[in-house]
Length: 326
Image (tube, rainbow, N blue to C red; front, side, top):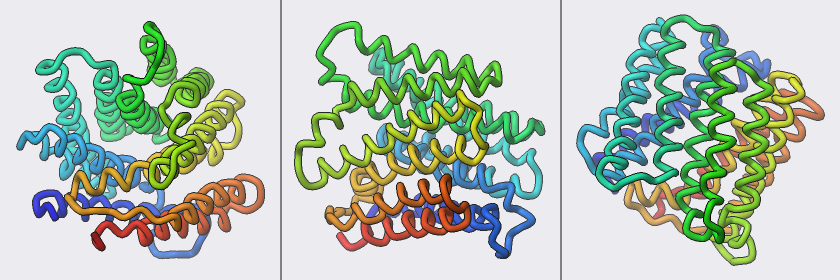
């Protein structure tokens, strides 16, 4: 196990657990923490996902300065409970992540995936800054959601780019990306939703997952989980375009898309970060199916029941994955 990386992973896991607890509070359960339940978003996006993504990039480039990002993102998100100004720390952390992609582009040349992921990190930095300055959370969320979407989309482009058959296809990836940034700057949910829809269609058609779904074992599991996530991103785009209820617009993207991506990538990311083996088990399909069931229940039947099922799905997934067993 990497002793250097373990504290950062532990902090991210603590953020996730806190975020899940606050999610239940926001769903209407009478639990401790009602006074800070509104901080659920920054705990999950900045403290958990932001710090974990920053750690993944730091491990990839192996530069000491890049390891500043995870603790700044984690500490900034937690201290912002007391004052939004502390989110400036998280903004600096996101700028460090932007620096990671600038380093890659400067030293290894232009790669579309690095441009897209770097843009996502920049949006995270701006979103954190806006939060620190007191902008409404509903406005800041556009920046945070797009950070997640662009980071994941860039990673998928990186893994699929060599298998895209025709020249000129990759530049079309910039169309939904540019549209999404325009939508965020305009504060237009309709434009952002259209970008999500187009991006989902692009990924469903060109992502290597469409080929790998015919494989077996872990490769097939990853492909199926990714494709399910792309469907949720497409539905999320439709929800934003039609201005459907807020909970549906947010959680089609965060739970349906983002957590599908986490479930798909975790068996690969954990070994890379912690230097531990993870054995694939078909039992991982159970929390994946439960996650998607939880969303259907949440949107079509009962928010509280759906929230509980979603939390159980996430905890069950990591209990089954258990990278510490080697």
